[in-house]
Amino acid sequence: MNLKGKRACGILHHLTSLPSGAGIGDLGAGASEFLDFLVEAGQSLWQMLPVGPVDRALGGSPYCGVSAFAGNELLVDLKDLEELGLLSAGEGTPGWAVPDAPVDWDLVFERKGQALDRAWKRLREERKDLLEEIEAFRKQHGAWLGEYSLFCAIKASRKGQIWTEWPEELRFRSPKALEAAAGALGPERERVEFGQWLFFRQWEKFRREAHRRGITLFGDLPIYVGMDSADAWSWQEGFDLDPEGRPATVAGVPPDYFSPTGQRWGNPTYRWEVHRKEGFSWWRSRVRHALSLFDCIRIDHFRGLVAYWSIPAEEETARRGKWVEAPGQELLECMASDHPGLPIVAEDLGIITPDVEKLKDRFGLPGMRVLQFGFSGEVGTNPHAPHNFPANAVAYTGTHDNNTVRGWFEEELAEEGKRLLSRYLGHSVNADGVAEDLVRLAYASQAGWAICPLQDGLGLDGRSRMNRPGRKSGNWTWRHRIPGPDVARRLAETAMLFGRAGTSRSNVINEP
Image 1: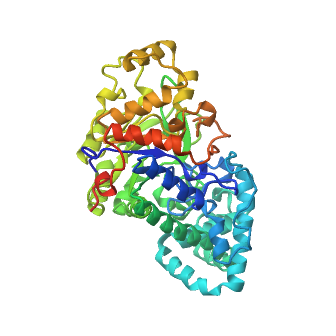
Image 2: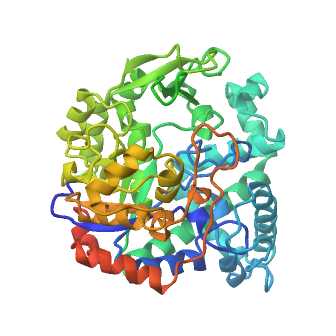
Image 3: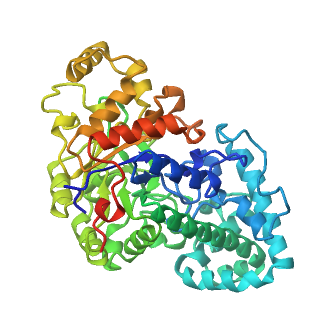
C-alpha cells in the first residue's frame, strides 16, 4: 500500500473511549454518532486499537490479548439485544455509569457479563430461531472459535487461573481430558460462542455503516499475543515455551536513554522455525481475519519481524536480552501473495536499523512519523520534523502511548524545545494553541495520511492520555462525549485547506 498521492486525514479513537451508559464505549449509538462526526469533520479514516478480548487482571490492555481472532464481547451494544428481544425494555440502555466517565473495568466485566448471561438465557428459552444463525457462525469460524470457547470455559471453571497452572492433562492438552472438558463445559462454551456471534454480527453492521459514510477503518495488529491466551495454549509448538509450558523467552525492547533497564513486556516469543515449516499459516490466518474486520491494519512493533529482543523469562528486566533474527521477508511475501496491495502500515518507531527500513521499503509499506519526536536534536535532519516526512507515511501528532500534545508541551517538552517549536512555526507557541498547531503541521506535511488522537483534536491536557507505558494500572480508561459542531467545523476547515477533506475510500487505499 503506497500512500503517495492519497492525501487523507483521520482520528485515532478507541471504541472503549466512546460514550455510553454501560460504562464502556461499544458498537452502538456512540459508534454511529462518531462516524457522523468524522464525516462532518472532513475525515476519511477511523483508527482504533485492537478489538480483541482483554484480560481483566491486566487492566483491559488491548495489547495483551486473550485471542488473536476473537472479538471483545464487552464492545457489544446492549440496545441491539433489547431490539432482538433478548433483554427487557430499558436493559439495553443501562445507567451504570456517566456516559463519559472513565472505564471501570471491574464494573464493566461484572455488569455487562451479567447482561449477556441474561440475554443468552432468554435466547435459549424464547428465541430458539436464532440458534441456527449461531450454528452457521460456529461453522464459519470453526478454525479458532472452538479452541477459544473451550479455553475460556476451562479458565472460568478454574476461577481465572492462568493456563500454565492448570492440571497437566489440561495444560498439555491430553485428547481424553479435552474431550471430557468439552462435554462437561458445553453450556459455558455455548455462552462464549454466543458473545462472539453478537460481536461479529454487530461489527459487520458497523463496518457497513462506516463504508456507507465513506470512512476507512484502520485497525491495529499487535505483533505478540498474551501468554495467557487461547493461542498460546492451543498451539504451544508455535511459541518459545519450556517443558512445563511456561515461557522460555519473552519479548521486550533493550535499554535506552529513556529506560535504563529496557522494557520487559512478558509476551511469549515465537518459534519462527515452526511457523516457517507450517508455511506461516497461523500468521496468514490472523492477517486475513484482521482484514475481514478492517480495511487496513498497522503492524505494531514491525521491527520485531526483522529481529526481536529476546529476554530469558527468568529475568526481571530487559537488560540481559539479545537480538534474534526473524523471517520477516518470507512472512511478508506470504502476506503480499494473499493480499495484493498489502494494506498494512508498519509501526517503525524506536530502534530502527537499516534492515528494518529495507524490508519496509521492499514491500512499499508506509511507516509512521510522530510530531512529538520532531523537536529535539537537529530539527533540520530529524525524520519526525514535518518537512522531512515522505509521501508514503502516516503523520501523527502522537499515538496512544504518547502524552497528549498539550500534556507533552506542559509536562515534557524542555524550554529549549519550546523555543525551537516557536521558531519552526514562526510564532510564539502556548499550551492553549499547541495541539491545533501540531494538527496543522501534520495536515500540511506531504505524508499521505495525517492522523491525530481525538484528545489532540480537542486540545486536551495530559489527564486525558490513553496509556502511560510502564504504569501497571490506570491505563485504557479514558472516555469522552462526541465532539460538537464547532470542533468538526474547525477540523474540516483545516482538512480542506491542506487538501485532505473527505477523501473517498477508493482513493484512501488501493482497493483490489
